Amino acid sequence: MTPNRPLGFASIMLFSAACVMSSPTAAMTGCNQGDEARVWTAPLAPQPGDPLEVFAVATDSGLDGVIVTDPAGQTARLRSLSSGGPPWSQYGTVFRPSQGTYRLEAMRRGQIVACSEVRVGGGMSDRGSGEWDLATEALYSAWIEHLFNAPPEQSMRFESLGPVLRDPTQNFLFNYLGAGEDNRLPAQPDCADLPYILRAYFAWKLGLPFAYRSCDRGSSNSPPSCQSPTVKTRFVDALVPLSAFNDESRAIMNIVHSGSGRTALRDDDTDFYPVPLERASLWPGTLYADPYGHTMVIVKWVPQSGQRSGLLLAVDAQPDNSVTRKRYWEGNFLFAQTPSAGAGFKAFRPLVRSGASGWRQLPNSALDGRSGLPRYSTEQGAMDPDAFYARMEQLINPQGLEPAAAYESTLNALMEQLETRVASVDTGEAYMRAHPNTVVAMPSGPAIFETTGAWEDYATPSRDMRLLIAMKVLEALPQRILRFPQLYVLHGESAAGAASRIEQLHAQRLSERSITYQRSDASTARLSLADLYARRQALEVAYNPNDCVETRWGATPNSPDAATCGRHAPREQRTRMERYRTWFRETTRPPR
Image (cartoon, rainbow, N blue to C red):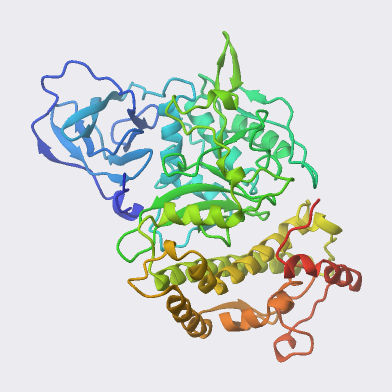
């Protein structure tokens, strides 16, 4: 069940059907999809000379490849990009297909496990059952992984979801309907909207229903609760234009919010249900809802290999609509047990037919795993943060990590978080430069973390809280080694010795790693990691876009670093920020 090492899309788009061979299907008379494997193609109406994309997906085990038989009867193995699972997939492209019928066979150990035929020129691809069955859910997961695939070390950040969906090398469903429908697709969800918009987009292309609920935001003593689902069937068995998807997207973004994913783990009246903390249940496309309202979507597992740490990659959207791929670690995936939220990993609640024309979401009691989909589980609700993070570390690095490798992986994750904050602060600066003499209104109390308008778009209280947590996590790694030595490969070294060695490594790295930002006068400033740790107290009140960029990076008043600062938040806002400082110092979000 170990995924193959991923390849970049720059490579895959050079592949073509090659290696002509005698057909293993010569004696085969039928061509049928398998129970746990299926071959999908795009676009819906393939044309001669235009690329025919092929996605073979399986939920039981890996695939060896795809065999293509062209209209002339010549057979070739499709060069493909392999992804581990579940679900497992093979993706490739038949370039310049000729008119006629192509036969596509997914192979495993010399056996055909799924077969599809598609007619190029005058034919239609198999669009699926029109229901969210196992095969469709598996394609959804594989599509999400493919959409955000790139070498793990490559940074992926986009101004919004739109550029991702408009990229034909990433999006298997780009112009799937053949109407140029993606060429001007806007797609600008924030973090709560992102999983819903991805789901609705997929439903639009595959002719599926989708659902969402109106929920409240809960209180300090109870998680959000939701109303009955709004089930949309506009796309079912239909080919509808971009305007229809835009209409439905706006409706979704007007209803869902940060409370939509934080519902109680045992609640049936929700859009998502909690799944077990096991690799078989955490498919790409799974949501992570943290206790404070932020959501992320799993996009890829990268297996541990030798001394290289394994990775769990996810994407999130920000209030400014930017979308970024990030690695799992404690600084990104906040976890806590709180009466105001049901936090953890969750999957979309399945939507099934009910009667002749109706649809319903399945209750928790029906999600027992027998359908092949991840089962319902409340195990996350019984975990404290230490147990949760230890369990996730075991999933990501089942062989354990040498302490220095664990430190470097955590350090790299912190640096990713800092670079993302550089972009967020720059976005706020651009807004303030474009709106001189503007004062962004600051909400009161806990609302600084959840609001609308310019404060939501350009202030960074939630991001800064996460940054301060992340800095604590890196600094505390030696103590973690002492507490959980079983998570590390010590090679006979004592936990105390390993912890001391990592303390020395941390002191060295503090001066070696840095970020740069643009000052108010357009000059460039460099801050080492040591500088940022020294500025932690200032970073507790550095989230206000009314302050200059120097203040937002922790420059203290009257210091040389603050000499280029020309803008300050109003006194009344600064006074309130001082009252809220304890939240950031203790890195604990206040109750609503």
